[in-house]
Image 1 (cartoon, one colour):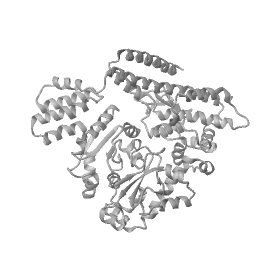
Image 2 (cartoon, rainbow, N blue to C red; image 1 turned 90 degrees about the vertical axis):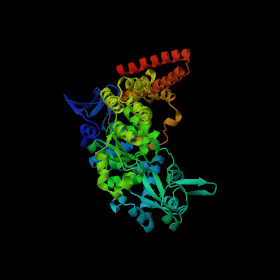
Image 3 (tube, rainbow, N blue to C red; image 1 turned 60 degrees about the vertical axis):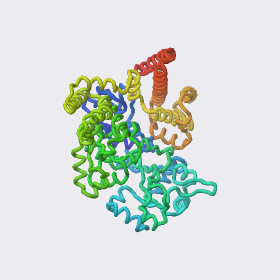
Image 4 (tube, helix red, strand yellow; image 1 turned 180 degrees about the vertical axis):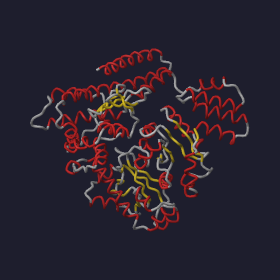
Length: 571
């Protein structure tokens, strides 16, 4: 497998791969960009074409083309390798290792379940007719791998058992439910929408019950309209956007993400030609969702009708996006119509709505006077809805522009608007500092990823007859660092895959000792970053409680940790 890894690296240029995610500029013999892993305005992220490596002098991240895809896609080594192998036209074969890996068995169970549901759909004309009646074309149904779960208690689990999938893997994948009487399939008599990660692996399902008449035909009960997979070790709904895998290329090409709410909205949007759409699947937009989008574009369009645009959850999503220095616009839809309804009525109207989307603040400044003819109500709504949004804008010129618009609309001077914005500043000085540090800090998964790489090296080298490392020199240091990481955050159970990953990464590396030293330093730095964030949070609480003595003590601790972090930058 190490030869396959080397072949992938030889076929792919890191510059070409990285340029698909970020805008690169030539800098002598290298390339530079604003780092995609932390917020910055001056480029400190450099790629060496000669060495085929990258390094950021701001957050100290670096590596090769594989680790770059790991970081930017949020994938494990195997997931990144799959993406790059497909791009390089190389087939990955590692069946022996995978068959011993429980996590891989979960992915296999979900992949087989997808194929099972797809095959079952063709045997149920009523279910297929329902999809076609909603406007889906056969090609679209196949593209999104839509299927159907029959109204039977064990049809899927019996199928997976015959394929060699254990009950434990089915349960961990969220496909079955265990009861005192045994196991049964979680999804029954439902249209099945597979949810994929950014590399195209199925990680969960969303099951929609058929409409009432069709449901009676197939024996469906009057249960919830949608049933989704539970949270599992590979599926976290706050970190997944439905349709992201299918939308990836269009997000880059259009330099804009269109956010819709449901699966049908998204699928019909793609079918209608607006393929840069992603769906939140009914959940509130989170920072993790925005981080996913921001890998591809900083421009976000919300496809919501006038009523939905007024929801507080939407306001929070806009505030979060502004905090990430993203631009947010709103596509105005006819009142009472969601994207799916509009697309079925008039595809061109949907495309036009996206094309004519307005900045979210412009949208509100036009909408509110129409909804509230009374001047006092308009003034109140602008104070409650628009002013807080403006307070989150990063660009002072944008702020000044909208202050001028509000003054003109309300026929007042600008000064009281500026005063209102200052009152509505969402973050205190301490919170702003914490926000800045949070942006520059690597996510928690990076700490776990570094620990996983170190563990893989130690396992790999420890199993060799002749090793190039003095294991006893590094093992105690590593174990000491692990004490500072929550047990649930890291898992080293899949030793077979860990050894494979280390061999694939480092086979033939003549500088393995230097590699593990740097990894240990990076892990220690990540631990201190997390500790800093925790102490800053405690400091915030102490200030909130007016605990002056505690706040002073915590401030000293934060300063000491900050000095240590600065020391890491100098190494």
